[in-house]
Image (cartoon, rainbow, N blue to C red; front, side, top):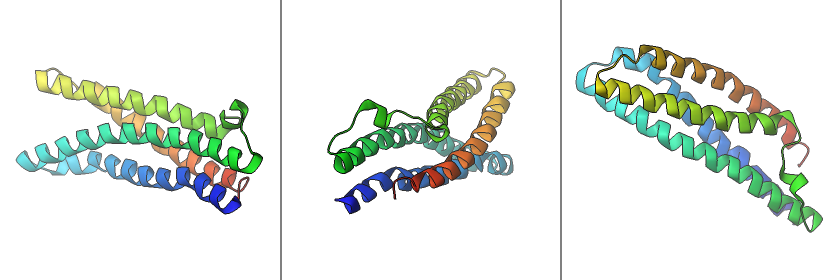
Length: 156
């Protein structure tokens, strides 16, 4: 049963690694976007917007997976679990919830950029803020992943 518990607790970090890869590929848009022209840029921009939407839902799913996998883990190991077992009691967990708030805000900014661009309004300030929030998130993601790696030893 402990092997099953270990596999279950590893579901969150493994799926999170996939999302981290997608997030950092998504950030490459800032460099690629200025190099592309015409139809290629429009296609890449549309892809950037679609991936951003999917990434938001992916983050929600990975966070939900963290809670569910901890609940299952404690049920297997202890025979039951309480809400205190799944609530964040450490920096890693709270940064994960902060990351959720930030990705939702990032998506809101991205949608605002699209809306203003489509209506012909100025959007450079919002676009700049969107990029800066992404920069902050990149740093927090690296810290979060490292702490998660260390925190994982508690379960293995």
